Image 1 (cartoon, rainbow, N blue to C red):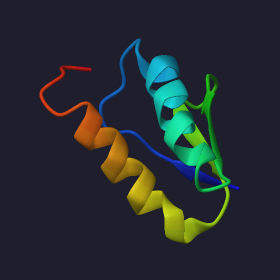
Image 2: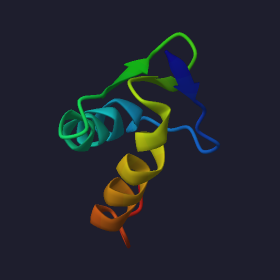
Image 3: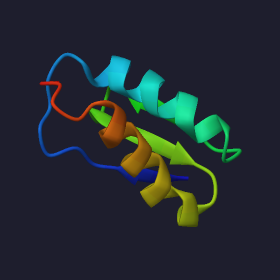
Image 4: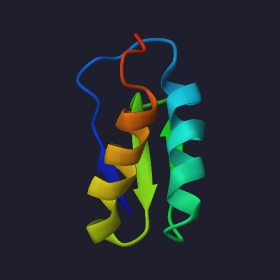
Length: 65
């Protein structure tokens, strides 16, 4: 397990984690929000991180989260 640290923290982190987890499932990975560290915990193959982040950012392009 590795941690994805987020530079901009706000109250939508849990929602972002759920959206990212939806993309992660197709790569047989998962992402969960860690309340204590205000970070996203990534479980899976490290080589899929970029694709999951890219797909999520494409979906949210122009959305202020």
